[in-house]
Amino acid sequence: MDESETGSANFFGPALFVESAPVMHIRPPSIDPGITSFLWALGLAAFVFLGLVAVGVSRGTALMLALLSFGAIFLFVRTRGEEL
Image (cartoon, rainbow, N blue to C red; front, side, top):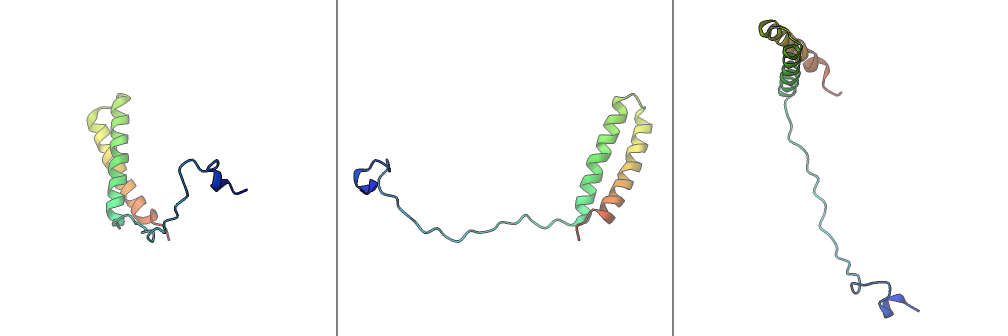
Protein backbone atom coordinates (compact mmCIF):
# COMPACT_ATOMS: atom_id res chain seq x y z
CA MET A 1 0.00 0.00 0.00
CA ASP A 2 1.28 3.44 -0.88
CA GLU A 3 1.52 5.73 2.17
CA SER A 4 0.73 8.80 0.09
CA GLU A 5 -2.79 7.45 -0.47
CA THR A 6 -3.60 7.44 3.23
CA GLY A 7 -1.69 10.59 4.09
CA SER A 8 -0.06 8.87 7.06
CA ALA A 9 3.52 9.65 6.08
CA ASN A 10 3.03 13.15 4.77
CA PHE A 11 1.19 15.56 7.05
CA PHE A 12 1.42 18.57 4.77
CA GLY A 13 0.03 17.18 1.54
CA PRO A 14 1.93 15.92 -1.47
CA ALA A 15 5.53 17.00 -1.77
CA LEU A 16 6.12 19.69 -4.35
CA PHE A 17 9.47 19.63 -6.06
CA VAL A 18 10.42 23.04 -7.33
CA GLU A 19 13.54 23.39 -9.40
CA SER A 20 15.63 26.14 -7.83
CA ALA A 21 17.61 28.79 -9.63
CA PRO A 22 21.39 28.33 -9.93
CA VAL A 23 23.24 29.17 -6.74
CA MET A 24 25.19 32.41 -6.89
CA HIS A 25 28.56 32.24 -5.15
CA ILE A 26 29.21 35.49 -3.33
CA ARG A 27 32.85 36.33 -2.74
CA PRO A 28 34.14 38.94 -0.31
CA PRO A 29 35.65 42.06 -1.85
CA SER A 30 39.33 42.07 -2.65
CA ILE A 31 41.27 44.00 0.00
CA ASP A 32 44.79 45.22 -0.67
CA PRO A 33 47.41 43.41 1.47
CA GLY A 34 48.73 46.78 2.65
CA ILE A 35 45.37 47.67 4.18
CA THR A 36 45.13 44.28 5.84
CA SER A 37 48.65 44.67 7.24
CA PHE A 38 47.83 48.14 8.53
CA LEU A 39 44.67 46.94 10.30
CA TRP A 40 46.48 44.00 11.93
CA ALA A 41 49.33 46.25 13.05
CA LEU A 42 46.96 48.91 14.38
CA GLY A 43 44.89 46.42 16.36
CA LEU A 44 47.86 44.60 17.85
CA ALA A 45 49.71 47.85 18.65
CA ALA A 46 46.61 49.11 20.47
CA PHE A 47 46.55 45.81 22.38
CA VAL A 48 50.22 46.25 23.31
CA PHE A 49 49.63 49.87 24.38
CA LEU A 50 46.61 49.04 26.53
CA GLY A 51 48.37 46.03 28.03
CA LEU A 52 51.43 48.07 28.98
CA VAL A 53 49.32 50.84 30.51
CA ALA A 54 47.30 48.21 32.41
CA VAL A 55 50.41 46.79 34.08
CA GLY A 56 51.65 50.21 35.16
CA VAL A 57 54.10 51.33 32.46
CA SER A 58 54.02 55.09 31.85
CA ARG A 59 52.00 56.25 28.85
CA GLY A 60 55.02 57.69 27.04
CA THR A 61 56.99 54.45 27.27
CA ALA A 62 53.89 52.45 26.34
CA LEU A 63 53.32 54.70 23.32
CA MET A 64 56.90 54.30 22.09
CA LEU A 65 56.78 50.51 22.46
CA ALA A 66 53.37 50.39 20.78
CA LEU A 67 54.66 52.45 17.83
CA LEU A 68 57.70 50.19 17.49
CA SER A 69 55.38 47.18 17.68
CA PHE A 70 53.16 48.75 15.03
CA GLY A 71 56.07 49.12 12.62
CA ALA A 72 57.40 45.62 13.23
CA ILE A 73 53.97 43.99 12.96
CA PHE A 74 53.15 45.94 9.80
CA LEU A 75 56.37 44.87 8.08
CA PHE A 76 56.02 41.27 9.24
CA VAL A 77 52.41 40.88 8.09
CA ARG A 78 53.09 42.78 4.85
CA THR A 79 56.04 40.59 3.86
CA ARG A 80 54.94 37.22 5.21
CA GLY A 81 51.17 37.42 5.66
CA GLU A 82 50.01 36.66 2.13
CA GLU A 83 49.20 33.13 1.03
CA LEU A 84 50.93 31.86 -2.08
